[in-house]
Image 1: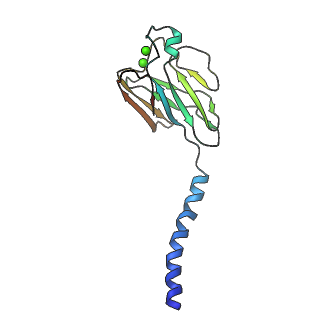
Image 2: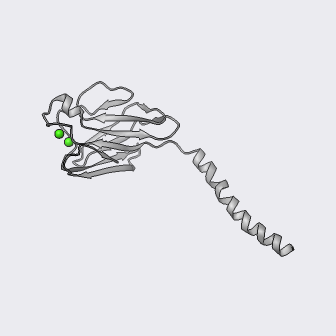
Image 3: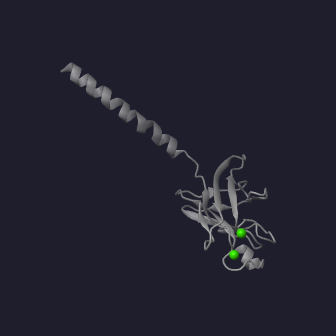
Length: 152
Ligand SMILES: [Ca+2]
Ligand SMILES: [Ca+2]
């Protein structure tokens, strides 16, 4: 009888210990945005109008239930051009688009202020970095007919 109880305890204790350690670690985690969608090919003919350039964008998503401030976070295209976010917060469960062209920044739409397209239709990689310069997420695509965007 004593042996049976001892073996039952031995089986139960490790199973309880694992979630007890994991839960507090998740509770203190700061929300981390990630790349959601890249619309690398502006729909229609690439005419280089500001409207067309702005229809090229990458979207970030904050999947957490808490808002996340992304000042100092950056997005880099394969050719080495970098956009660094100013003071902006992505609301809980919300998205933010970074348009390639010129425009007035809002809480949900930011503008790279480029006069030309930056994301190559033939293939490119978007890299999202945190303020320390660590790569947090990447989104890569190659050319494909009849497609203007990819999920990241
Ligand atoms: Ca493009
Ligand atoms: Ca196009």
